[in-house]
Amino acid sequence: MSDIFHIVSLDFPIDVVRKCPGVSLDIGGSVVKLVYRSKDDWKAAEAKKDASVCPLRLLTCGRPHLDAALEKVKDEAYISREEGKTTKIYSCGVGGYQENEKIKEVLDVEVENVQEGDCLIAGIGHMLSNIPMDECIHQVTPGLEKSVIDEQKGVMNAWIEMGKKSNHDFMGSDEVNIVYPEELTLSSEKSMEEVLGADMYPYVIMQLGSAYAGLIFQKDKPPTVCSMTANGGRHFMGIASFLTGIKSYNEFIDLAEKGDLTKVSQTISSLVATNNKDEDDPYAAMSRMKMEHAIFSFGHAVFQDLDNFKKEDVALAWLLSHIDDIVISIHSMAVQHGVKNFLVCGSFAIRESVRNYMVQKLAYRDCQNYVTYKKQYMPRLYFLKNGGHTGSVGAMLNSVEKFTKDRGQAATEEA
Image (cartoon, rainbow, N blue to C red; front, top):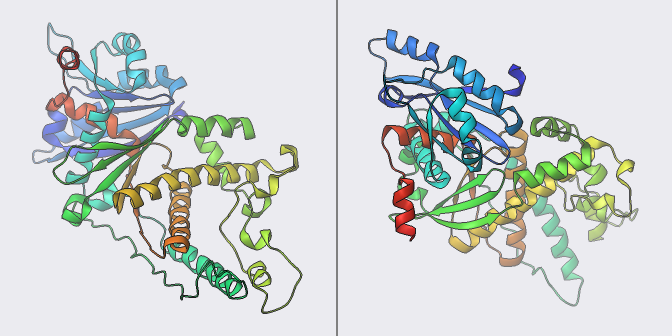
């Protein structure tokens, strides 16, 4: 049974853990995110006279396993009880409304559903301002952007040489002057908010869940939606299941990690492959380049059948294609709104390989932008640890110090 859950612990101020009711939920279209105070953790914290923090457990599972998750929380969670009263907990996400009665029955609580966006913003705000940066943000593998930039410099120089032999010099003859971004350094003492200060703004929270949405934050202004699509994680897993028969995200990523980029996807070097050995032929020069990044995610699949390819190669091609769409949206926001910092949360980017691919694809997109505008934007991706739990953490914080509107109040204001 344990393999259907992913559980981690995150320290919170002892006063927050003491005041909270002990459990909160964010039930999305595909994934359940639960936060709970375990009996064992609370007992250990109380035994320490000077304890300043206590861990809360963050549980993740698929929607089909909600019943098992609730039973686990029922057994392990320390839920506050007051004689003669039913404990109220907060839930967000579409499933919070759909599963109300079940949650009430299993946990013997009252459930109030609150706005997911409010909880997400509160949960992220807590993590950015109260948790050291290295505990809050994933460290990205060093050198990813440099490898992409080096590859694309070679391609651009080949195109420039080709342009010199054309009647129309589309690329221009200027030297390619793409610089490398600074490697990401994560403080072990200061929060992200403390490290970046005013340079943090404007920033975008990129929520990658069943659907995808971007919220832009500007200094002293309320956040606004700047991107939204239903072609998110649920769309991704639907196509993934059709293509490979895989029924879980982690299994699919495991499969994609075994894939060969060159079998289904296509690089520039394979696209212009030639036997010409002429040193002055730009196409021949490009065909000899070692390419590690695809230009067409399904380039070799044209006029082919699915059965002609291995599942792992198809899985990698689909993963890269989907990441391309995410990155195009992110880079468009960087160009349109002048955003440098993108905070990625949600469950899509929980795997390291996915995060690495996103960093590489964004660097590739920025290089392509340089071809057209001779300008780099160099947006930075910050991947939030436990980013799928921002809503459930926010719902927990709401039980300590209420920031959401009552349903009656919200309805009156809308009327």
